[in-house]
Length: 66
Image 1 (cartoon, rainbow, N blue to C red):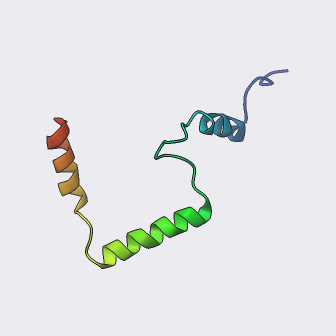
Image 2 (image 1 turned 45 degrees about the vertical axis):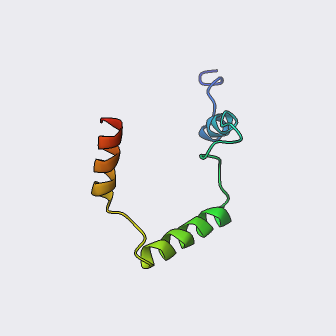
């Protein structure tokens, strides 16, 4: 049977998630956790607590010699 050994996208994603270390900043988040992070980001933006993307990119490029 052709393709019998191919993982589904879901299976491949789940296998990939299992390789993420516990202390990784890229751990999977629940929908509620994402909503909270978006709310915090919007609040920061409304208070003017943000940096222009191009300026931030320039700063990182200079810092890391990119």
